[in-house]
Image 1 (tube, protein in one colour):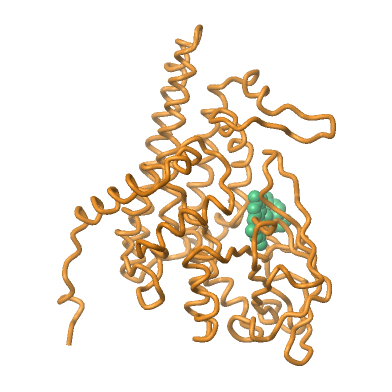
Image 2 (spheres, helix red, strand yellow; image 1 turned 45 degrees about the vertical axis):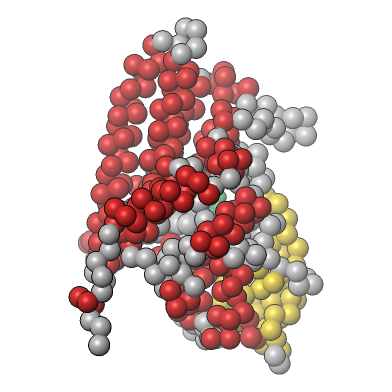
Length: 399
Ligand SMILES: Cc1cc2nc3c(=O)[nH]c(=O)nc-3n(C[C@H](O)[C@H](O)[C@H](O)COP(=O)(O)OP(=O)(O)OC[C@H]3O[C@@H](n4cnc5c(N)ncnc54)[C@H](O)[C@@H]3O)c2cc1C
């Protein structure tokens, strides 16, 4: 019998070299350029890269081998993500691989595994998250979208809010209320809803950055087969918690911050090289250095969380601290780029058209402005900063 200690030791240096070689040679130059210039990636960009990773057997760095994943440990995942960020390869689309996929592995039936996992792995199925509603964001358990059982179907009626990528997605994993009695958490069920079903309407929400990310999704008597339920009826809250607890420990976020900081540093240098811009490098040096120290702190926090995770002792307060630190740091880093461009120059990238729409050109500088504006949402999406602070306080002080 093979014990854990009999397993061959992982040569992390060789692994790093192998991933680097792959990233350097396999990412299509046009895609790499889009990532390097911080363009908004669409479904086709993500899917193209996912197909390449899938062909290499690296479709799912966070999944066990038995389900088509790589079986890598957290250190390998961290190295993989670091290389991907440094080589300007696209991040992997997270709603399938990082969010609902692991929930399916844990709570799904073998039939559901056969049905849903291949499309996530090869990038042909695109998922979005239907959790939040008007009046149910931080207090998610208050959600009201109801699902009434009718034979082999649930009939779903309600509204979802801030649904990222719904306009590009095939499926929405959706929390619905199947019981209005008792504790509100116990009446929640998780359904997998094809967005092509009759009765679904998707309406864009315009955000200040002028890109289309989020939507409202209206459901009007949508008939969803009972087979599309993940977990037990009334067991949706357990699935939701399982997902949220893991969502916050994503190695990719820290390593992408490191890359962003390098790009912002380059942008400051470029501005300083313009006529009359010589003083800029000195003005921004302190902020860049401080951000560098904060990125290192994020890295230490992440590595410590990874260690805890590998030893089965990761606490929610640590992943919440990581989410809190990284989302606020991302805003501070991108603000350096914005300030270096200067308000007048930056304002040229966000002209308001006659109909009130923001129109912004597609180049590296204006992409930075888009991102500056979009990053305002980093401290809201995935749980607000105040909510993270509550999690930390509850665990540390028991309040
Ligand atoms: C860009 C973007 C993308 C998103 N994508 C998705 C998605 O794909 N799917 C999805 O389901 N949702 C998504 N969301 C929704 C997101 O999860 C919610 O916006 C978030 O949970 C906050 O909920 P809310 O907007 O209802 O604000 P509220 O919960 O109403 O909060 C309003 C304010 O009150 C504060 N507050 C609330 N409760 C407390 C408390 N107990 N203690 C202290 N302060 C509190 C909050 O911190 C916030 O400042 C997205 C949001 C954004 C901005």
